[in-house]
Image (cartoon, rainbow, N blue to C red; front, side):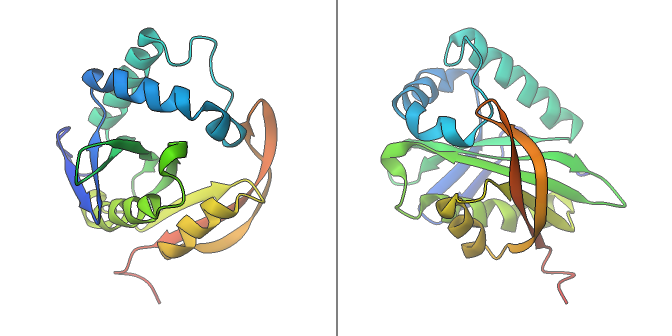
Length: 189
């Protein structure tokens, strides 16, 4: 995989994606706290110290380690007009040849949902990732019934590929997922 600078900035419509920094803690914790009821049904169970400075530092340290190793890239999504934090998006489980694939994840704060920001951010991240990371495909899974997330993926060009039983732990329970993928424009048939 290519070496990606940690200060990478990806413009994406009305949004900008940038790597998370320790200094983002106050904004991140405030938005996640305000959006907790909105986010928890769709995410792995939050740790007991979720939103603490210690939790944030552990996350940023893990994200930076994965970034340096070329295994994962976690971005915060900001509104381009005023730098307001909107949410986050990540490419994790980055796998080199012969897979040349990564897993997409994303979240948006409750006050910013339904305004098209996530669709722009996901499309921009994928457009950047194919050439920058030399990926052939980007994969994503959603809990059945998460229609908002389905619309985000479909707007970015993802196609449904299958159904996985007990795919991930979400809100404390193993949940089935609908699987999607987006194939690089260089190899689409």
